[in-house]
Length: 364
Image (cartoon, rainbow, N blue to C red; front, side, top):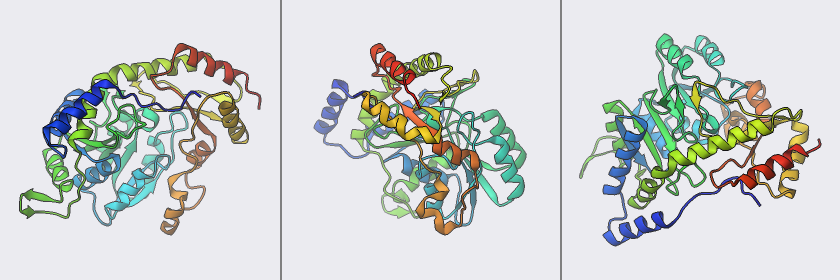
């Protein structure tokens, strides 16, 4: 079976973990600081604050950016539930606008319509879904026009670029996840990027119980710290990220070239203004054919996944907030059609050719 995802871990990760264990300092410490500095340098950010996972990075980033009880935050309905949950954790309310069907990201046009209609929206939380950057020129224009706080969920977009600038560095804060299936991993882990000293200070306080010094606690905080063990793994993974991302992009281009023209399948676009990193290679098939297509792939030794089979606002946990079906028709349609196939760096040429050969033989 060719798996949908395959974390790459080896002797270098084992060696650095052993060093950390031998040091006796396995909690947050010098390795975390080094990891923060290397992430900040790699992605061109003034500050980086490491956290225990991607969700805690999102929550702390929103808090540090000033999101509070009663605020409304505009975001996409097509993402992992942590995106909208993090807004709720702050006591704020998520507001959803529809996606651009071309790239699955929040539509600037639909976002502006929501901003015109709802003057209570204080922030916009973008998600660079599947590792594809949002239209940042459009959103920076909207930010300047409407004056909202811009935040970025980069959980799937490590190293993705928009016109040469790293995602996560456009807004007041950007949050990343280092979960096991991401383009690079620390097992669990996250990081907040920001160019704002106040955001960095508040985020660092929020993830450490609200602590100002050893015995003074300035705010209600949380235990969201990254460990040295996680950071050590991350330091090794960072060295390989550019090569892994390049492999993902090359694999995606191979699929786009060799799956072109199939009537039952629509491949993702690659815009000249962006360098996507293809956390997922996600295609569209008709809702009537998707289950059969997934089964067919499995029968032929190819893993697949659906990210995501439903929009966030229709989840059972969101029913009490009053959202209704039909709010974002393009996102709801995408949730019925999307399916991801393997694109990870461990794929061999033989794997790629097998995947193409199998897909081209599929009959609805």
